[in-house]
Image (cartoon, one colour):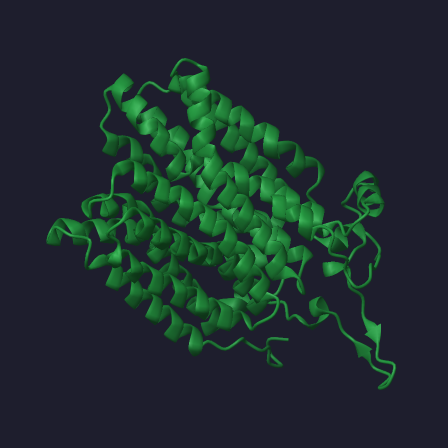
Length: 451
């Protein structure tokens, strides 16, 4: 979120006003024109708030509640964390629906309704008394985390920026990283303030979601710049003084594909499969990292602290990879991200001391920052802004599937072999496959029939 304050000062080349669409109120049009900077940065800030609060349903947040809830309710710890795993499977079917809503009604409707539902179900956990109600409530919050809030924020930013898409998307990664580190702290502080009452902690967490993100999503969000008479990046076509030709903006050069057109291209399915592979690495390491470190003699407190260090690395990585996306080919940055993740996964095998544990977590976190930025930008780069919501909805189930397989697969390897040693080379192999697929992926071009 702090990075947005710096980036918001970046001035686009030229501001261009077009005729705003009639479905946007005059009040919102006036707001964009009185904003002393390109309004796209306000949309980025609003989207960042949703990425921040989605962590109310993150696995690191529920980890704070596992002990007090199991002690108070007599539930097993596996039962409690199982709600997140169950929601991950269901999200594979919810993502296409979220993509359709995003395409049909826009990011403002999707994001505002998702934030409202997230806050409502999280605060309602105060009154949960049985596993069924807990799974329904937390599962619904987890679905908001994994489907609409995951897709909506990045798609909204991709609508407002093309030339600066990587840099603007990196703010979302930083916002998510801050939430990943702070929401578990919020949960514990709320618990401490209420004499250890985990029920009141859930209640105030839900209220916090509403306060921090709901006003921004309702008042600030505009689906795309054309709705308020602006253009992506604030750019306009410029005449070439020497050649007499018009130099198109980055947005004008971008080809826009419909979902029906995109699903006929190998590139869409390749990007979807690559997304599943890199998130297979992401979740496999994240969920089992603390247990692996403790197996290697690292104390539980150090292992938990390593997760916080990893969150810091994720914030740094979001800025790093986001800026690289605006300077280097998207396919190259995506390949470098996969290579980084595969290499840093192997680094965990060398951990024997707390310093090495923190180093491995920090470096792996930098790679995770790339996952928050690069895959969404890659889809927008290949298929444009026109049907981006629907296309993201079609590719996101592969991400959910990769996360589920990574979590379960690493556990199965441990159960079969009694060690995590074989899991990290498996993650490296997955990264190698992802890179190989990216090397042979070509950005699709529209032929006469497609056009």
